[in-house]
Image 1 (cartoon, rainbow, N blue to C red):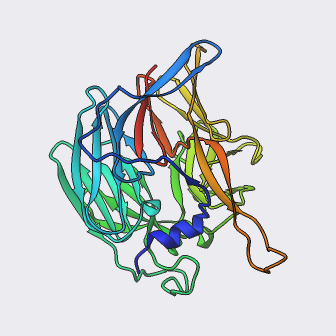
Image 2 (image 1 turned 180 degrees about the vertical axis):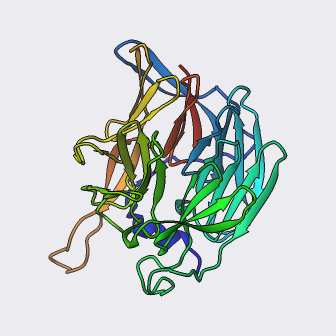
Amino acid sequence: MKCTHLSVAALLGLTLALTGCQAVAPGSQPAGSDDIATAASATTTASADIVLDLPLASNEVAVDPGKGTIWLATVQPVGKDTLWAVDMHTGDVRNFDLPDADYNGYTTHIRAGEDGAVWVSLPYELVRLDPETGKLTSVQFAEKVDGALPGALDAGSTLPGTWLSAVLPDEAGVLVARNNVPYLTQVNADMTVSRGADAGDGYAGAADLARGEDGTIYLLPPMDDPSGAVSILGGSTIPGTQDLAPQRLFVDGSTVSMLSADGTTTVISDTDHHAGAHELWTRTNAAGTQVQYDAAAGTLVRRAADGSQQELQLEHRTGVTSGGGIDPETGKQRVEDSTVTVPDRVTDFVVAEDGTVWFLRHDGTQLARWNP
């Protein structure tokens, strides 16, 4: 079984077709020349620039601790897929060819471990890059899995297969969640594989994994579960009120937030179990610089440890939505397209040690940099 682009995209319910998304071929990415947003905040005016135009969409961005490199991957249903490395100081770009796979980016994850290794998940293959040597190693996963849920490979189910659904680096290597498999898999740095902790039937194929500061591991439910209830591995469940496919999970201090397929976020607290109060997605670096992305307002807000604040207003884009109803004269579906203006969506971002925010915008086809 292979996870195709159309099946996952249909599941995620992507109904907004944004215009003006022009990709630029690799090698034509001058850094720092294209100003993409400006805004006056309570204290300063903020702006950001495009660092890299991508030939295909990328859904996640990772930064390796202490190495000063931004990592992202571009994927396509067929052909060569690419792992990109962007030097945060010089803007230099390196490319690494990933193994061929028939899959799409919604099910691909990229993570950087504490040892500097970069992990990329394909449907049935996990790839590890050693940035020091440029060596790629990988391990293949069989579709048939001991202990998988009944009917895991039934083509008539909502999400068939046992493909890799989430990865989370740890001290040994990386933890892997697999679709329709109710336990995690441990993959070590030498690519040896063993069975990990039980996740429970409801989190077989967790859409994402995240670790809190105290080591607690959180699991986001599978993409076809609209509950949005986050599980604490080996513990309780945090209720949720989401009615859209969950896609990403973030833990920042005591705040747990999830990103949905439409780009909105919901913050849930592990103390009062209050869900749906905000549409904020928060990350904080080691220096205490906090960045919040508000999907509804289309803003990034950066708050330094000294209390100073900057706001970046993302540019708005024109999109087309299809609507209508039944035509009373013909009895057929009536299609009425309408033009809407929406904030440019951020698909992922990281906060570097110096407070620089690196984020994917323009449906994941551009990597942008927002300097302090």
